[in-house]
Structures are given as structure tokens and as C-alpha cells.
Image 1 (cartoon, rainbow, N blue to C red):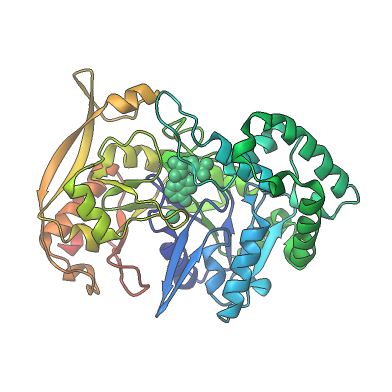
Image 2: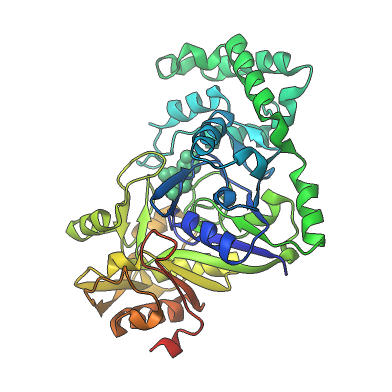
Length: 437
Ligand code: IMP
Ligand code: MG
């Protein structure tokens, strides 16, 4: 089966970018696909001395011979993409030859960013979502509402100017009460029209029908890697709603976002860190808002790629990851940041939640219950060894292997990849974890 997907099993930032870049090369992938989310993502790829931070362009762009697609489920920020193209091109990456953007992506406009900012202070039962302020939610809302939606293909239409004027009028009405949060330029129809017409001209050679391109490629047996953004626990339908993103960021989103039937996806690789992080508001049962959390943050450099915000840090949550893995149809796990937990005196794994005096191993549906669950931990001895130079599983201490085995057992999936640092070479491939001991 030619399709493989890479799905985050936590709240984003599981180091999917590293894995996608690596697999693109290792599996001899022909095509990498970004199919949901937008410039809220921040995927970091380290190659040799070079670090690349990608928000909108698929992480396969760094590999020669790989075609990168941005498919209809994405909300697309043309300014971000053009900036990324310029940055990568100046570093010798011929992006324009390697990138195709669907004419069906929904375009993020300045008013979406204004709306995101205007609503950022709004609280849902006492807490704000704390979005990345990239206009993601407002753009998806317009897509579902349809009346104010503009797709990339619309930007070359004869009525594009008229469309902008019409939407600006609607937005002026909708944002009337938020004057102080809005910059005049964000609702300046003429200016936005000129700006976006320019974007459309620059992007034109890269715009195409990714849906048919993909379906043809799969028919021909070409290898396709689907690059998830965010993580399953931020999925709009299946995550910790309403503290989620606005797209299907679990495995269920691949089909809808790319236009590829699920039966083409032969393998799903679930990515999780050896601990947990979350940015923004919302339930996080294993959060360590204490010295342990700060230690993890320092060791893992847990600050947002997109917003620079310090990430909330905590222990590995096997209840949430098991749920995310089942939901996403995960075949194997990739456990990242093993170098970080390798520095800790002991490590904990949340094996169940306690809710109203009962132990549960499934996630609650209501955010109020999510907030009330208490993690039940298993504590494992630490191994305090620098594993960043490990070349094979045999280089890991027995306690580290035991930790991975326990995760595998609790989540119900084999561990196939273990990452011990950001570089491509700092990756261990496991055939059989039991055999590694
Ligand atoms: P939005 O996607 O910007 O609307 O933000 C909604 C929630 O998802 C916020 O809690 C964000 O911090 C979180 N979020 C969005 N994108 C990412 C990501 O790529 N990594 C981690 N968290 C994210
Ligand atoms: Mg990220």
C-alpha cells in the first residue's frame, strides 16, 4: 500500500517534522502531503548544521526528488508561504520545483487574523483557548459558513475584487465592536485586493489540482507520506473540545483533507514525546506546573516554534495516547525526545485517570470532566545517561528499554522509532523491542 501517514498523538509539537523529513529520505517517498491545519503548525527539521522551521510548506521540501502537496483541507496563508519560499530558496532549496498547492485551499486573509486577535481574550468557562493568532479558526469558520470564504482558485477569477469588497463589508459589520483590536489595513479592501492579487501571480506556477495528482500517483504505486499537523488531542471532533484546533488533526483527517480514500493508507505511524506538552489553554491531566515541568521545559527547549510561548510540560499520558492511537489507526509508535527523559532521576507514566473515585482508561467527553480527572501514575526508575549518541537500541540502558516497553504495552502498539536528538542521525529503528533487551 503506497500511503503512510505520520500523526501526532498528543497536543502537537511531537517532532513530526523531524520524522517526516527522515522518512521522506529513508522510505524513498515520492510525495509529502500537508492536508489540514495551516500556519499554526511549526515543524522543525535539522539537517547537518542547518535548522529549518516550516509553518506551511510540507517537511519533504528539503529532500531532492520529493514533490510536496498542500491539499484542500489546509487553510492557506500566502504571505507565510512566500516568505518560506524566499527563505528556503536563498538557502539553495529549489522550492518552486518541489511544491504544488491545491486551488481549493481556503485562504487566510488579514480579517481572519483580526478576528482571531479580537476573540483571543474570550473565555470559555473561565479559560481562553490561547490560539496561535494565525487566523486559523476564523478561516475554517468562513469555510463552513461559505458566504465569506475565498479559495486560492478564486483569487484569479474576474470577480476577485468584488468578492473582497463584499467580504470586507460583512467583516466590518461583524467586527464593529472590536475597533481597538483591529488595524485599519486589515479591513482595507483596495489594499488587500492589490496585495493578494500579487500573491496569486507569484504563486500561480505552483497552483494545481493536487487531488487528481495524488489519485493518479497512488494508482501508479508511488509512495506518499501524509504529514499531520498539530496532534490528535487537538482534533476538532475527537480532542479536548473546545480547547482544540479547528481541523481534524488526528488520523481521521487524512482522507477528508487530502481527498484520498482511507483504504490507500497502508501504514500509520503515531508520534509521541516521551513526556507531554501543550501550548495554550485546556485540560492537561499530567501537567507538572512545578520544578519538574520547568526541568523538562529547559532540557527539551519547550518553547513554541510558531509563537515562542513556553509550553506546558508534564508526564507521558498513556490514557490519552492510547485513545489517540486507536482513533488514528496507528500501526507503530515513534517515541521522541528520549534524550530529555534520560536526564531525569525518575520517570512517570499516567496509566489511568481517576474520576469520581473510579479508575478509567478512556478519555471523558466533556471538558468539565477532563478538568477533574486525576492521573494515576506508575513511577519508573530513571537511568540518567546521555543517550544522544546512541546508534542502536543496544546502546540504551535497560531502564530506558523498560520505559519504552511499558509505553508500548499501555498504548497497545509496537515502538518502531526512537529519537534521541534533533538530527537525522539521532534516530534508532526498532524491529522488535523485546529483542532489544
Ligand atoms: P489555533 O490552531 O491557532 O486556532 O489554536 C488552537 C489551539 O491549538 C491552541 O491551544 C494552540 O496553542 C494549539 N495549537 C495550534 N497549532 C498547534 C501546533 O502546531 N502545535 C501545538 N499546539 C498548537
Ligand atoms: Mg510544532
